[in-house]
Image 1 (spheres, protein in one colour):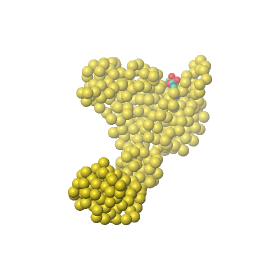
Image 2 (spheres, protein in one colour):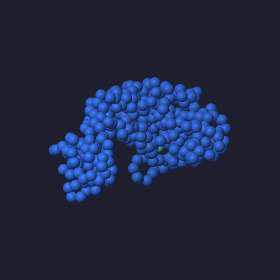
Image 3 (cartoon, protein in one colour):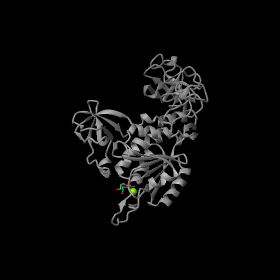
Image 4 (cartoon, protein in one colour):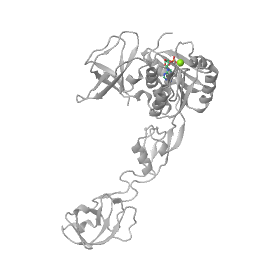
Amino acid sequence: MTMIPIDEACSHVLDRCAELPVANTPIEDALGLVTAADITAAEDVPPFDNTAVDGFAVRAVDTATIGSMLTVVGTMAAGARPDRAVGPGEAMRIMTGAPIPPGADAIVMVEDSIVAGDQVSFTRSVQSGDAIRRSGSDVVTGTMVLRQGTVLTPAHIGVLASIGRLHVPVVRRARVAVLSTGDELVRGERSLAPGEIRESNARMLTGLVAQAGCEVVDLGIVRDDEAVLAEVLLDVAGRFDAIVTSGGVSMGDFDVVKAVLSRIADMRWMQIAIKPAKPFAFGLLNGTPVFGLPGNPVSSFVSFEVLARPALRRMMGHDATADRVRVVAVADEPLRRGPDGKTHYVRVHGAFEPDGRFHVRSTGEQGSHQLAATAGASALALVPDGDGIPVGKNVDVLLLT
Ligand code: AMP
Ligand code: MG
């Protein structure tokens, strides 16, 4: 089978992953989701004029002469309603967030006050309007606070709460099932029999799917049994928005994922011109996207990053092409490789340094089974076909955070 370029594989996948429907979602569940409509405020924020400081509500003219004595006529906490006006020669104690009592037109900070019994004088004079936060000075009724297509941050959620919008129309969060295949795989802490290994991919992929912002269910291990796998996949396809499998997509005799999906789904089996993660399968099972990732843990990781993650993000309304930030980094050590027709996704760790550039070094062993060496990677360096990147030269990297 001829190898296809990564860009072709990516567009093939993205073209077949449709955006999920819009759901009016409680704001506490909407973090990281994408708004599906412009959001307009139906309330002013703040809802009323209030004080920005703890201090005294006064008539500004009464503070013109520093040292004049005013009579303290009451106290207002945040949440209180004024029970009297502030008249000439009077001051009312007031706490941050409390409404401005009628008659007052400025607030003097408590730090600028000297209290003596029921009298107060000030060490500073104020102007009308000082320390008053006007109604609508943050958000005016009728203005658009969030555009359609906004990726909701915690601060956006706060804004929605501030205008009393407790539900927001967003592209729904994808529900994704993760499963591993392989007769050699073991979950649990028991010691391994000869030939067995511990299952790690589904554990890792569950985390990666969650980090992509999806809801994820770890279905664990399915044995290399075609009938069982077919049953599980058909059931799962009806209940989830996407399925991520690991293992069984290469050229081996027991690659059951390949055997089963070829039969029950509309699949494309790809050999992609990248290393690691050359084998990759994608298709639709009764309309549900299935990502068939290779079993080698590092391959699984890389193919999730470059193929599955952008697609899951697109399904949730994100701009898949801008998913991971791509920067031109400096190789602080040679990133060696030989020509083989593939782009190598070298796992590197790196940081922005005082020269403003992102500097990278290899995380170490780069074998597709050596997950421990990959685990510390903060970026994937895209080392093009050829003899590698000499020390000090530029290399494109995808930041993994
Ligand atoms: P496969 O793609 O099924 O041929 O598996 C390729 C390699 O990855 C084999 O060495 C498997 O034992 C290993 N492998 C497959 N699935 C997992 C998994 N879930 N966790 C850890 N290693 C795995
Ligand atoms: Mg296998």
